[in-house]
Amino acid sequence: MTELPPHFAVAPFSDEDTVLPIAPPGEGQTADALRLMGQIVQQLPIGVAVIDYEGVFRSVNPSYCQMYDYRQEELLGQSFTMVFPVHQRERLMALHREYVDDRRRDLSGEWEVLRRDGAPLNVIARSVKVPGAEGRWSRLVYVVDITDRRRIEAELQASQRFTRSVLDGMSAHVCVIDATGVIVTVNRAWLDFAASDGGSLDDLREGANYLGACEVAASMSTPDAKEAVQFLALLRELLAGHRTCFELEYPSHSPSEQRWFMVRASHIEASDPPRYVIERDNVTALELAQQALVMQATTDELTGVANRRAFFQALGVEFAKLRRHPDSPCSVMALDLDHFKNVNDTWGHAAGDAVLKHFTRVISGHTREGDVLGRTGGEEFTMILPDTALDEAEALGERLRQQVSLAPLQFDGHTISITVSIGVAMLTASDTNAAEAVARADRALYEAKHAGRNTVRRWSTSAD
Image 1 (spheres, rainbow, N blue to C red):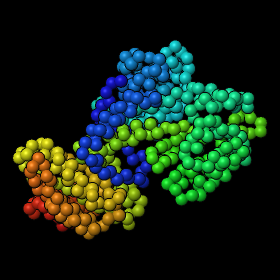
Image 2 (cartoon, rainbow, N blue to C red; image 1 turned 90 degrees about the horizontal axis):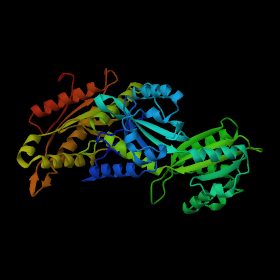
Image 3 (cartoon, rainbow, N blue to C red; image 1 turned 60 degrees about the horizontal axis):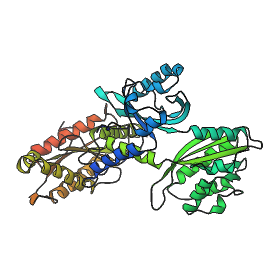
């Protein structure tokens, strides 16, 4: 597989009302994360491909090639539509262009594709946008072959005469229930997982009330309760005949590891009396790979805080919230290291990098959950302070200024003193765009520099 470009990214902050705080990693963690991401992509049993704006394969991993029975060199440089039936190619290219041009929010789903020998495959594909050449988006695609799964499901829908050996040969956890939620049969993988997860086997064996177990899970105060409530609502709709199937991805972390599962529940059309199959797959590897890409896309490689793109996306989310709730204050803080050029000139660029990483650790250690710190220039940083009035932002800036001055960096036997100048301003609903608040904070920062550095200034109308 060709090496993944260092700017690999996914579109962050899909929920406009959610901003994830970003904390810097420890020393060396960024490079390790990038190496780990590359190893994960290479070894994934899931096909991964990068398709550029023009619809051409730019990168494919070994699993993707194996799935379609092509060599890597036979795919690279070719249109991605080559793995689809001829009569679908024009439509699929149009869908691709709509997606990378932001005219379509999602291009994930189940597709029928063709192997090199013309044999059909059923796959589930998930797409995310990544930066491509010339400022245009490319598309990163994860593909899972579900041909065998769909074949087995079709057999179940056509008849109840499925065999225990087929079910127990599946790696997916499979359970079949009746219209009241009582378990009719399960496969070995289902029972093995229930036993290893520390739950009660009596609640998940044949004859147990699976719907009742779901109701208990939804009523508990656990980190996964939200997903349990959502799953229960969808399951009730399925059993009531209001839907024929549904899919849901959810976390189910154990004390020793993080885990994510994809569950698919569907009505077996040919069953009489009605039967419903619940199929659960472990998609942890896929989720971790996507998280690694999100981390790379949204963080500054050196310091680990939000990069410029991610910061302004987060600021845009706060601005949208402020437009809906004008009485909720939000401040912006601009921070600039004083005499940073002298550090590079005196001790070298390695020392400068160490100062930047040390600075972000100090700042992040004295901010609140929900604040977003971003590196928006060389030694320039900007912070979003939700639910923070200007007086509070100024007071926080003073505390941060003191903490930085009291925490010199020990580097290669030298003590490097650090100070920071800070400007604060309010984000207001009357702004034309969120960047206006950043400009005001920058003007306040300029006042702090002009006043002798290592100080905090707030923007005011008179200063403007």
